[in-house]
Length: 306
Image (cartoon, rainbow, N blue to C red; front, side, top):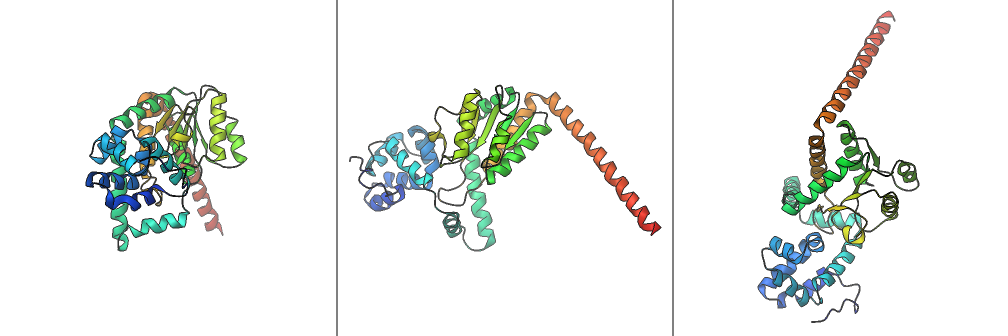
């Protein structure tokens, strides 16, 4: 079967699967459903990796892609990327998520736990451990770190920056959008490293940070479930962390787990500096606490005089 993606650019992978699912052999039916349910894994994994996740053979992976009308697995990935970058509105994503949560708040809890358990399984893979080790090396060697993220990722960038600073690693957060980002990029220079949390589509701030990093030969560690194919050659390391199901409400628990593992991993690289920084933090906190206690006592004395 030949690839007919050019004949109808609006059809999605989901629609292709639905149209031919009943006509496929059982093994290919299971694989086709995997293509729909695990878009990020299919987009980022090799045929062998996809086969291992789906519990089948790489031949079945490729054969199913062809049965759906694609010349190759690569052609399937191109349409998956188009599906993911043409993201539905937040309201539609929430509606799809709610449809799968079951009744009551307990159903929502179980649904989210199930999603995060699947993400943790991804984080446990040997290839993820190897990429994580390389990423920590990059961040540890840098003279200064810059953590990029906008929106919900901006909150995580602020958190990572705070925690890295606490263990003695000078870090700034690139967590603003628009022209405000320019002021923060002034601090980016040779010898630094960037930890980037970003997702397709490739928006302007991401392009500017990547271009600025390339100008100063600054390595970028990317955390993303779908952006890597759009920035090939511009990032030093990619950590593909799923955010739940495609076209559903994005879940960031896996990213937080990865960031907190980085905090521990970086602290282990230079534990003496980490302990010294935390000791200084404790000293400053004590000074602040004493100042507030004194102010409170003075206030009470003034009240008594009145």
